[in-house]
Amino acid sequence: MLEQDNFSTCLIDGHFHPLDMPPGAGPSEFGKRQMGVAASASPGQWAALQSWSASSGSPYVLGVHPWNSRELARLPNPREQVTLWLEQLEVYLSSRGSGASVALPVAVGEIGLDRACCSQETWPWQRLLFTEQYRLAQQYKLPCLIHCVKAYGMLLELLPPVYTYSGLVHAFWGSPEMAGQFLKRGFYISLNSKFIEEVRQATCSISAFRPNSTFQLASTADPSVISKLQKLEKLSRVIPLERLILESDAPWGLVSNLILPKHCQFLAPFWQTDPTRFKEACQANLRTLFL
Image (cartoon, rainbow, N blue to C red):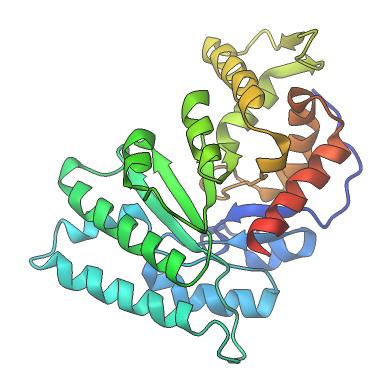
């Protein structure tokens, strides 16, 4: 396994869920080692997330996650709930610049589409939630944080032809062609940390992939790991380092956000650079987009 470099403890996680962290790895423990851009998967957590951000000093994002469309599909009048969520979200967003002494969201998110976790009956509500929240992001001059699973083409069709503020496509694991489409629209990209960690743990050694590609997998590596490794290599050819952001997506993507320094070590050769420069570039991108 690759050895971890002695990185500074100021590494910023591009996306994680502090209110959903398991016991012993919650917000207080997180704040001892790293900062991060915090998110929630439920409007019911918005007030608590804002309070956590105010006490921790970490930035946060607010939005209606596409998973919430499952709740809408069970309601007799789902449009009323959509309207309520959007009105509540705008209250948080409209406080920007008001001088109020509260922590303010740095982006609208997570918003997007999910075909893996949500049934077909939720599709009209997913589309409505995405388009309306994207509109609010543009209105309040904020980037958006996109969650998309098995729906990249559909999502691209919903993006308007004229836009000012882009954002981050988080936990990306689509094709290089789809990555290129988001990059053309000005988006930054963070890769799926769960898949990166799966490949990292199965990799015994690695050298720069271009022009002399060599790697060695553990004998116990699942055959699917080779496919993921090849996909990662292809994505590294398309996504420039200047548009890449590191995230853990903890606890959904990883058990611990402390894995990010190891990901710097592992990913740097794919982008033909050293781990320190890789880390600094990703951190600069995050600050440019959110901070």
